[in-house]
Length: 362
Image (tube, rainbow, N blue to C red; front, side):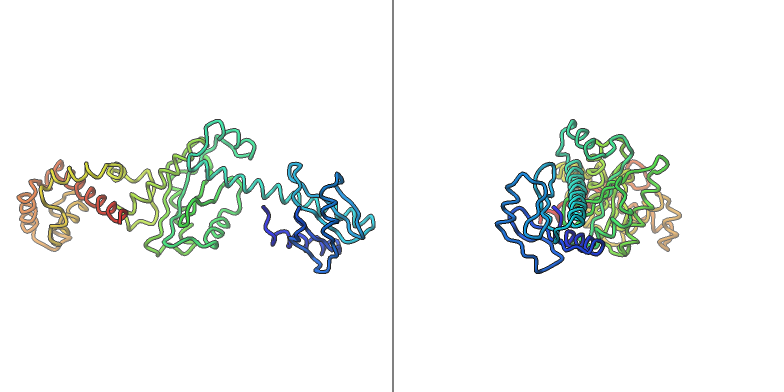
């Protein structure tokens, strides 16, 4: 549970304070950490102490102490010395190791609980029972953020995110795959989506990821109950995918700002193909030339305003009208009519969605 390096650092700190040599052994007699390489501990002595009912024992000049977790023996702590002072120091050291076990166990249990909560692996009654045992408040505002990295995340990335949140016990930083870092953020009453946008950008800036095209951070809706955290996680996960399809230039993607893309993302591919066939017949928007596609994008960008679009394209108004008329003849849709423009815009988004899904299949 506790790494050997942590145990070693703890023993060295205790030795520096008490000037006593220590050693930690597991229940099989294997040395896990030691401040003295010349400890003369016999395996049979360790075994006899493990099998005894004693909590501590003096054996051949060494003080032995049992370190338990919920009455389950975890480690044997050995202190070199026979006097009363060594015994007291050993008792304090054993208490320190036991406290470490409790702290690490709680941290491990919290991380496991949050992962299962995110993945919707818990029954409703289990959520509140376990949250109570782990001292996690149930009725507070939270939001789930997902930082997706271009390559498999490094340990330094996770540690950097954790340090950014200052080790707050109310926020949880975890992961369920190799490329994502998940943040379950507890919010103050005055914090909302605007603050989440700023926080997401701060995370990217702190990690130096704001210029990497394939690094995105998304977040779901703010929820007020612990049981709804998994919903916020699913929304953040969807926001990542929808953002890649329809807004690849955005670094920060909020589920609440996905708009119609959120609906298109949930459409079955056969239905999409049927819709495109009805709109374009045997054609596809990919068949349009570059000039036509640029014209369409700029026309939508300027809210169907002919004058402003022609000005930004540096073409005469009549030239733009000619292009729109030409497009109407080939598709049957007049982009100057709002209803036709909406149909065309949705069709373009559906095609982009279908292309994205094809890349996932290969």
